[in-house]
Every structure is written in C-alpha cells, then in structure tokens.
Image (cartoon, rainbow over the protein chains, first blue to last red):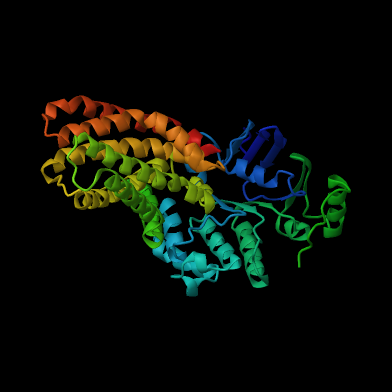
Length: 246
Length: 225
C-alpha cells in the first residue's frame, strides 16, 4: 500500500460465470484526482465502478480506498462515497423529501432538514419537495438521484453515465457541480461515452476494452480531437459510434 | 444507537411505501381470506371435529399468505432498483436483514390478527380463552417462518422464477416450525395442559435462534451478488 494512493485497485478480475468482465485492472489515484473511464458498451466500465464501490466483489484482486479495505471496512467506506448510476436508487412511492430524509438518516447527516433544503435547491427540485417520485420525469429523477448521492457530502464521487435523462439545463448544472467537486478537492471517477465532456471534466482518462485497461494517462494537455484519435486507435474499428457532447 | 437509527429508517421507509401501495398487506389478507372460505365450504361453518383441524386451517392460512408477502420484501427492492442503493448505504447487511424481517413480521402479524377475526366469524368459534398462549405460539411460529422466508426471499429475488424458487427453498426448511406451531396450537385449542406445549415451544425457540444466527453469519454473502 502506497500512502500516496487514495484509491488503490490492484489486479482486479471479475467473472460472471464464464464471462470475464474485468481483466487484471490496476488503478491508482491520489486524493483530489479525477478519472474518466471510456470504452464501448460491455467494456467493463460499470462493473469496475461497482467493484470500486464494493457493490460487487472482485473474483480476485483488492481495492483500498482512503485506507479502507473495500470488503472489510465496507460501512466506513460507504460513508465517504457517493454513486450516481444507471439506476436512481429512489423509492417511487416516497416524496422527494422523504427519499432524501431516508438516505440522510442512513448516512446520519447532521441538521438533516437544513441539508435536504440545500440539496433540493441545488438540484432544482425545491418546488417538487412533497411530490411522489413516481410522478417525476426521468430527468427529474436523475436530478433527485444526484441529490441522493451528495446528501452526505461524500469525499469520492462515482459517476456512471451520470448525464442520462438530463435536459440541457440539468446537464449544465451538473457539469458545474462536478467542477465544484474538483475544486473542493474531491475525487471523481466517471464512466461515460461522452469523450469530450469526460476529458473536459477529468484530469486523467482510462480506456477499457474487453475488461482490460488499454490506456491510462493524464489528459490535461491533450486536445479533444487528439484524444478522439487515441480512443479510435485503442478501441479499434469495431467500436460503436460515440456521442459527442453538446 | 447508530444501529437502531438505521434500522428504524429502513422500517419507516418500508412502512410508508406499504401504507401508500398496500401491495403486501392486501395480497396477504386476500389470500388468507380465500383459504378460510375454501375450508369453510369444505367443512361447514360449525367445527365439530378435532380442534387440531382448526390449528391446521389457521396455520395453512398464516404460512401461505405470509409467503406471498415474504416474496415481495426483497423482490420489490430489486425490481425498483433500490436494493443497490440500500447496500451502498453505510449499514451492515445484518441491519438490512433485521429491518426487512421486522417489517415482514409486523405485516404478517397484522394479517394474522385479521385472519383470526374473520376465522371466528366464519367458523362461529372463539379463541379468546386461549389468547395469551396462542399469541406466544403465533409470535414464535411467525418469527421462525418469516426469518427463513426473509433469507430465501433475498436469495430468490434475483431469479426469474423467484416465486417457484422461494417455495422450493422455503417449505422443506420450514417443516419443523410448521409442525411445531400446528401441534402447539392444537394442544392449546383442545384445552390440554400447558406442560404438553413446552416441547413444541422449545423447538420453536431453537428454530428461531438457529435461523437468526444463520442469517447473522451469512446475510453479507447473500446480499453480495
């Protein structure tokens, strides 16, 4: 264990039956680093994020985050991470306020009512505070999901296709929020298909192909077009067309 | 306190959701009502046969109706995509298990109270003189089968044929608790000595403790994937 490494994933392998989702993945990040994960569908981005969050156990390999071992110190680890994923993790029959109250209670957030008001303001859902989530549009649910993930002010944010369902305004607001995370020294790991957005928001980028990291570099000084070429080279001709950020 | 706070939060969330949808309690009560009606047609409204039959009818209603609720406790979380959110919270798997168990136990108890009330009307009988010992047996029996059911509900929630899988896993393991509950209830309803119930109560207590211990030791692995 290198004390400089805030996130240390070593030799991660993950198999689902006969299918190998991750192959010998190593990731080392310092506190405050931001990493964008790219790759075609099925490359293992979501699996990697789930393993790092300890939602999935790796078949072999180890994960250590902020000094906590993912399996042994799961409760302590979960207290400092937030995940925005494909699913919103929201309870449809509870209101926006009740959902945040539930998650806030689970994280033992101090002055919870004040924090809920702050978060609802931040995600632009103050007017829908007492509306049941089942009546929300996908975009509104994603906004509330962002609120759920930040209710406990986590030190590490895992973002798995976080822009899903967000409208233009929601996307812009969320980009500001990610930049704010970075300014606050929080560590961000984001899986995305948006190449331009990914390298704009993150200082480092990794490309996964068939569960293996085929590229991992600082990208602060690489232009968007250069990175697009690198991506095409690494992923190959059979890669699916990528979305380009607005 | 931290443990109780998180336990309370999960139970509160389940109760609010259930209060608004009434999915679990309604299906359990309808099923138990159906069982009572079928036996009522089969045996008539006046039970002149051995009172152990009454015990059998009651526990058939309790167990089968309870199973419909048990199947939903984890499958609803999985279907709504909230199970991962729950696992991602800084909470031990044992707390999640216990909260789910308490929720299902309370819903099942409500169903049992309603079932007994309907039973006394349909079968023109009273259980008031036996209320305390029957309450104890119902408590231990319900705790036993809901503990087993909660474990298997979590295991089967990810399966396509989850209801079939739950039944296949649940019934063979629950045989001791079912037999002990039916026997103990029959002895009480027949007005026999309380001492005759103790061996069955011991089985129920042992069964409950064993399955609570098993769930404490294994639930982390059950929730993992």
